[in-house]
Picture 1 (cartoon, rainbow, N blue to C red):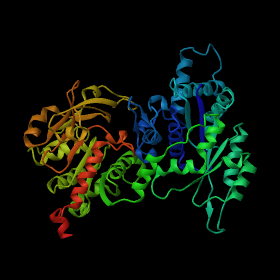
Picture 2 (spheres, one colour; picture 1 turned 90 degrees about the vertical axis):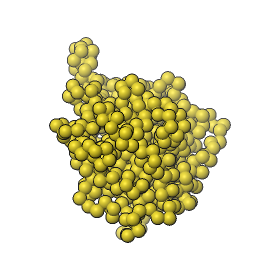
Picture 3 (spheres, one colour; picture 1 turned 180 degrees about the vertical axis):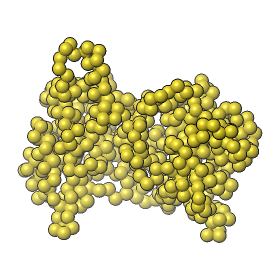
Picture 4 (cartoon, rainbow, N blue to C red; picture 1 turned 60 degrees about the vertical axis):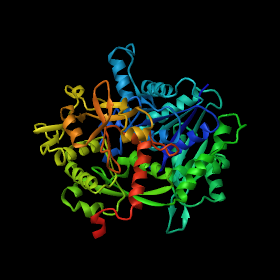
Length: 545
């Protein structure tokens, strides 16, 4: 039978439940267990697809085309767990399901209530999130203990645990031990209060994971144990990591979380887990050969989480060469009016990420033109790829009116236009071209060389697309189509073959990059950036600076 681990959080948000959950998956997979991971979010949106990146960070896209919470990115980067549309459920999706069923007469005249109907629906979602054959299902509950909106989810997992056989369900609670400079000590009271909130509704944590800046003393551990009714050895320290979040699985194994999971779930304890690959990764990050700087020119640059997977994939690419990646985060509007040569001076590569709407487009185009003309490695993703096409059309292919109908529906030359399948779409949520699609790479292109095969499957999230009416003229001018979705005859990748690295992908390769298996496009981009860094002179602008 499947065993279940429920991960909750307390005291404050953004403690790192997602990373802790992913680290738990790593430990269990190292024991040869098949793991599933799920995030239950208390917000009323059906999914995060219509939320602003400034509000909620990036929207992560799964292989099967679900727009998901960014924590699912952590799950997939750390683990081998299958992540899909059943790996995320929200208050909105749960209530929508219950209301639909009620409208269809599915409750036989009952008064529909939070208990049992909503909590039953949450438990059904938990079961769907654990595919057949799963040894351990890990379920992270969004929000913090005490939040009004989280109460139905906490009640649901309380009920769910009661229905499981002994040693088949456990609760891991993540809290904060704040350090007060004025008194020079860490405080346990917030943790006590948080656990008290859980116990009020009937959940007794089996394990406490305590986030802290400084090491926890044995006396603190004993105090937390006494007041929270958790065994001292199950009070686990999770101190802030020094180098990278990918140290967390190693630290938690060292602190004893692996042992606690095995004991509480009565798992076979005949395997000493081998974390050598993660140890090697930490070593490469802790002792890099050098540093390299990549400029990221985007619309949502003020919030790091808005491009979370982009930054992670860049770091994965750097780690593949044992180099630390520094980010120069540049708002696209700055490039529209400023001195682009000065703004980009000294960087070793340029990445233009995705986005929606006209804001920042002209800045991206100016940055790309400078990169193209000065042989700076450049990588465009989704809207970034479209900006590459527009820049080339205007400045090389002789199409000065080139534009996207997303910004100007009546433009003279719609080099980027709305997909035919999107013409009659009115609902905004979950209606884009989403998920993995096949792409046939063109023989002899740089992309085909990088991937080492001719057929790839990559994830998409877009409504606008390269207009094939302009393809012949752009290719004749030197912007080569390097990959096609054959069924729809859609251009998926463009490149300039004689440039050190100038590739645009309509899809999102960052979603498939892992620290132990960097995406080939990101690894190749960083390799080109390293070559640019090593060049004796880069550009006239850099010499002048």
